[in-house]
Length: 474
Image (cartoon, rainbow, N blue to C red; front, side, top):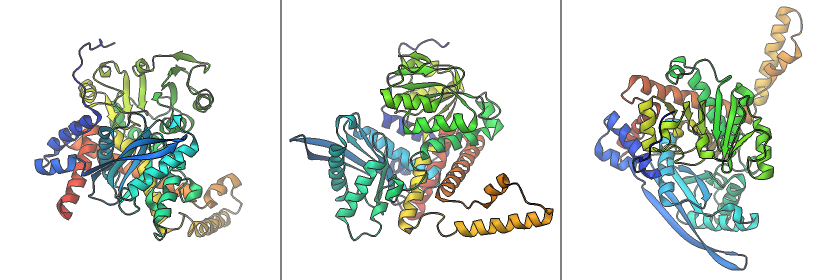
């Protein structure tokens, strides 16, 4: 096992890490320094302080909304509720959103928002009052708008908060026919879209599937075959980590041998029951007490030997202090910024393959794009054409049965006859998006001067954004 580094280099901030990774890729593609300076930094950051009456007294809340790039409109990015939110974090996340949208060809610019609070300390009614007040502050300055800036869920928020935001925006602008497109990630029953809740985790699954479809890429990580049987450790059993772990184990045959949470980590070399573990966490608030081996040192659990490590929690989890001890063959970044720049340099030098965050967790913004399109078109996917596809399938089955002279088995024809509903269409579009984006990034990885997947993904994003600036004007 590698020795511990007792004197690691000074760590970059989250924003500093993102910017240094950008600089590395910009140098690799030969980007004009002036254009690089324009592309790297946020165009605008709005900080707001607003009061809300909570339990018979006023509390003042601090929030931010950062706009990184407006090369495409609207800009897009989640709203995070957490006690550690600050401007550095919001700017870093906004930058990653720009690169993420560019890599997967979603026509949005990058934005991000955050509110400094611990949601667990407030009731649902209090959170609704806070969310509506925050929405009013942002909407007055067009930091929420279906045509200019479209938020979505992030850490600490979900469909409930997005429904409150959409309703408040609609109250402010009742004559805007597209008002419900002002945010995405809404409940499916409130003009949301099926498949959005699990979209980021599903995108992680599709991205890993595409990686393993290329034996040469898997071989660079010292892996072969498919996802079946691969030993997986997941950090964070929130929305993204849970769905990614569940899909990989239930649908691809991977073995989730370890899960890390705030109170520690659990392990089972035979593979954990992800659904049972998630239910235990919901019931108890943590992993302790689940009937497998428990280790209270969750940070050390990142260093467990495995095939795939999936950091799906917060940023800055793998640093210069522990990067030398990571024993995963492949790191799949489901969270934003889980690896610092210094750690990334260590992992690169060791030949550890990292599938970067702003490609791998792009499933959320991809399905948000589909929801935004649905809201603007005012019709759900599949409503106009599902039945005609079913009728064509019926005719095809009838023709085959006539040709062979006997009925086809019902278990075969059921799948043939079913028309695609909204969820089918969404999953198909997400799968295609993740496949095409990975193929573009791997072409850069194998054929360019990038050297690793992260730099290749940045290079792809930089070229697309810089081309937009040059064609449309900076």
